[in-house]
Structures are given as C-alpha cells and as structure tokens.
Length: 544
Image (cartoon, one colour):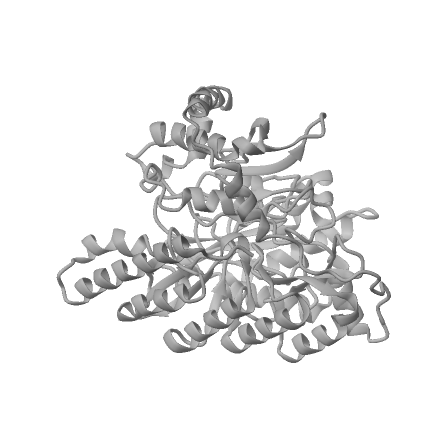
C-alpha cells in the first residue's frame, strides 16, 4: 500500500484546517449555501434528502485494518453505525451533521485518508481492478500507475474546474473487472509485439443519461509517457468540452460529436507538444511509488488441498474465492449482499471484524470492489475455513459472488435528492424472491444492477439485467433492461418496453430469468443466451 510522506500529510492537514474554517463560517451564517456549496463539494460533502452525505476516497479500493477501523469509528461517532461502499470503491456516510464535518476529515487524516476530489467537476477517485497485485491473469500490478495518476490529478490546477466530473480506471489484465470501457478514460496495461509494457487508452465511455462505450484511441503508450498522454486527453477535453449544458458536458459527448478520429488527432497533437515540455514525473518517483506495492511475504510450499466436508463452506469456496497468482493462496470475497440486505452497507461491527480478519489472514490488506463487496486479496487456502466461520457468524458469509443476489444498487430515493425511485427495497425483494424460489443456483452468473435515476450510479446500463427507476406522473416506475455487460465484452442493456410497478419489476426479473432457464444451451450464461436469441422472446414473456 502507498504510505503518505511528509508532503502528503501536510497537504491533507492543510485542507482539513481550510475546511474547518469554511464550515465555521457557514454555521455562523457568514457564508450562504450558494457560497458554501462549491467549497463543501470539493471535500466530498453533499446535501441529500435528510442530511449531509460524506463520500470518503479509497484510492483504487486499497485500505488496511487501521483505516477500516477508523471508518467504523466514524460510523459510530458521527453517523448511525454503518457505512455504504460504492461502485467507485469509496465509502459514503448518509447522516452527517455539518458541524461535525471538519472533525471527520481530521479523523480521516490521522489514518492517511481524505475526501478530496470525491465530488465536483474534477478528476475523481482513480479506480482499478480489485484483484490487482493478486490476480493470476494480470500482466503487472496496475496500482502503482493508478497511484501515480492520483498524485498527478490531486489539486492539478488545470483540471480542478473541468466541464464535468471525470473518472479514470487502470487495469492490467485481459479480464476487465473495473468496467474500464465505461470510464471517461480507461487504461489497460498491455504488452506489444516487441515484448514492451505500455498502455492502451480508451476514451469517451460512461453511463448516465447517454451511455457510451469508450473507443480505443491509442493501442500503445509507453509507460514512461502515461501521465503525459493522460494530460493530453484532459487538455483537449478541457478546451472543447461544453460548459453551457451539463447534460452534454461529459467527454463521451465530445468524443462522439468530434468523432473518435478527430479527437484522437487533437490528442496526438497535444501529446507531441507536451513531450517537448517534459512534464512526465521522473522515473525515480515511479520507482518510489512501486516500492510500496511490493508483494507481501508469501510463503512457499503451502498445501493446495481444501477440506470440503462442510457443504456450506465448500459452496462459499467455489463461489467467493478467486484464483491467486501464488500457489497456496486465493482472493476471498466478503459479500455485503446478505439475503434481504442493503447492497454495499456494512455495520461498524462488521467493518471492525473485516479489519481484524485482514490483519490475521490477508497481510493487513483489503480492497473495496466496484461491485460493493470487500475482498481479502491474499488468503492462504489453509486459513479459509477459519475465515469463513468468522464471516458466517457475522452475516458476511453469503456465497453469491456474481449471482443474482449479488446486486449492485445505488441509495436511491431513500437518501438521494436526485433519485426518482427507490432502489433499496427493490434489491431486497429480488434478493428474497430468488433465495425463496431456489433459482439462484440454476441461474449461475447473472449480474443485476439497479439505479434510482438516469445518473446510473447503480450501473444499470451494464447489468445482464438492469433496472432503472423513473418518475411516472408522481409514481415510482421501473424500466427493465437486458443484455448489458461491464466486462471485456462491454455492451449496453436495452429497455424491454413499458415500465413496471415496484411489485411488478420483481415479477419481471423472475420472468426474464425463467426465459433464460427455458432457452439456454449447455454452458451458456444469461448474457450468452440473450445475445443468441435476442430480446423478442423476453418481451413476449413480459408483455404478451
């Protein structure tokens, strides 16, 4: 993990002091809400339906036990005893009092955390593969490069007032576990024919009101020019991105309207200019960062066998454990999606338990997954039963990774002032329905995602089954989408037809699942069957 140096700590401490003063002036009435709003958003503080919401950055999802315990303490001291892990590998608190905001940021600073650039028209939290550094299929660990980009983008004077928010993902495997092509910039670390390591750049993806899949604008950028090429991409966007219409302000609209070819031409021109300026950080800085991401002290000669005599444990191993690059280890996923639970929520007690288990079994390291779960990246196979037992007893042992119960859902109208419909009750009812009908096992991999509004914080466009909540003449209504994917075979879901009521959408999901079970061929996932037979058999079953 990256560790703050004196400069990092001084920078974060200075921001805390600055924001304390801004909050004081707002509480005293010396700042109006209009004056205060841009200041609080720079520090991740939103005004939601019932209270302030604070979004805390977890860069590329990596954190240790001490940090997780600090997040638990904040949940108890300043919130209602829980936190909500998000699709950008962050955590949010939904019941924050304004007068406490400065103290929270100070508490975060003590454990090398902050809420800087988790909101506003700037470069947001850099995301990455949640199995980075552990994955059996990765080329290299992408996190040093994500950290380099984080440092480059933090307080970058040219990019603190972009036309719109900006999201970057970095991965290093053929398998896309970070929805890379649905980011403003997606970077895949690759190897060229000469055996050199570089980066492919995908620019102009995103979800929201106008979902788009990012095209590849350059297949190979040398890694020692990564920041320079990123800056060229941002400069062209900052120069031409629209500021007169927030619905057309994202880079995806610019790339679409200019055309990928013309956008690329301008980026290449800017890139050539920047290469002459020598803006790339020195190699010594990258090597300094890389040193923090060295492998932990993995043991050799560990046993590969797992005692599968307990069927519940065996099921959890099969579903929630992922192959590791080192023999004798796996990455173990902790599901935050118990049957009937709120996706992504964890109580303070559960956070402390996860911290304790990470210290015992995973070299004191955890990752927040963009699927709103937590992963212990480096667990010995010999420790899995003890780990699972502790998780199971705490309600964290659900074996549903990538199943229909592993639902991504935004907070929706229960919390969010932008939402048109509730997401949480729909997620809970679907989870309970498929737990009761016993179909989850038969369905296999089926990724379901729910958003409470068109902003798509629940990634509904990218779900094998997606649900979008809309307002229909003052009544909550839910559109059903089919055929989306956030993986390497990225695709956008299509709306099946007229929307459904809250009860109706749960029935509609089961109907779509039943069509798959009836029509699938050997080895096909839901997505494969949908792509083979098309949307019409599903529409026929749904609408007659």
